[in-house]
Image 1 (tube, one colour):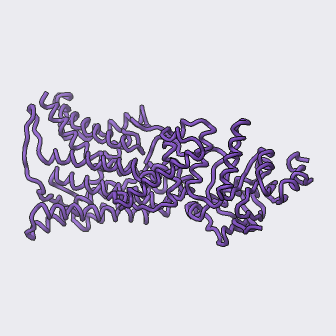
Image 2 (tube, one colour):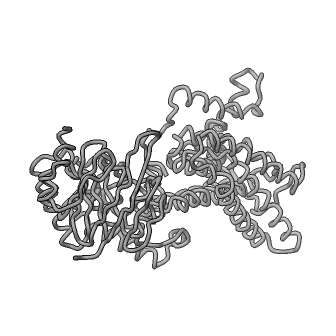
Image 3 (tube, rainbow over the protein chains, first blue to last red):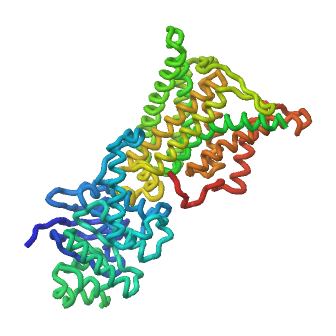
Length: 253
Length: 307
């Protein structure tokens, strides 16, 4: 069995009196596609936000690749190798598709203010490399012909792809996708599935939040179910599908 | 007609200076939504530092060119340090405070810097050393000086450089991304603190240059000079659409020209009742009109390309 890449240890988060996460513990192994499912409001996105440093957990914490993750430091989470997309797409709307991906390269490059002002050779070389790598990623998600278009002018499906390309630009070891199939039709979902499969084959671990149960069960190696902020079960899809508690959570029995 | 052309030229010169200062307001606003009212004082300190350094060196017998360059560089360095320090000490601790809090702090810092300058440089008007030879030109009945030409050319070059920085470099891209969505930018590994510090540093460097230009142009300086200059540059930024770089540049130049034309014709317009020393009212008429009819400014839009 491959080693654990991300471990959540009793992560808790409250919003006023609402317990959005109740001591959630789970572990994601290197190289797998891990699904996180649950009814609306179960705490899936809150879990993502705690993990990527957008929220500070009220209890517990995360261990990534053997080292604890610093809370409240999104840029450090990115530097450690965690990238994400958003349920409601959050691109830099007034920048081109290419520029969006180039921003994603930020964490892996280092040219400073002085270099930028003096336009040293090192800076210019690095910027050329950033541009090239960004083009490659647009090609990878198959929207390279939209490179110079503003992100806001892309179609919905292309915006989702662009968000994935931008996340991949940070060279993540763990890619977190928050409902990537939301609002997609059958064809687009099938293409997305191929894309995610490809990313996994290229060696990136994937954490997938998704409502589309068929997609999750077909794609994921293991699945965790959240309900009312608590972990119900964590197992392979075949077991999760038959679990009485999961059926109750989804059917509200 | 020659008054018209003359005032256009004067306005262009004054407007270039407004534009440089306005960029400092607009960059900081674009990235963190703060109106840094202490920015005018940074410009003032840029002028006064140049007076001290260049004046002293000239008195010590250094050639004017080198003394001037030393004065300008020192002034840029001091202002950059000041801008960086302001953000670090006064604004960063208030990053998550309600918006009014940093605004009041900015006004407070403006008062602190004015008083500090008064303690260092005194209450009197200071003479700015002549750094450039006085050469006059005449075209189509309008007079202008080498200093005016240099101010306009240098401002244009500086602004071109800034645009290249914002639109072509990795830092500029990070700044634009942060302006659009700080949370997502930080998830991409952009260090928000560094981007904000960069906005203050770059704005202050531009402010220092503007300070030197003001000093060279009017040959006089005072610890309170930053107040009115700052307000007018702020007006220029609002006119162009605060948060928008091109808007600040255009707004600055437009405001300069409006003001100069107003000053040139106010006597005729009011039958001699008001003289050209009332020119300040035009900037604030512009501010009021913009706020009443197009508060987002010329280029402003809610989700505009801010940086």
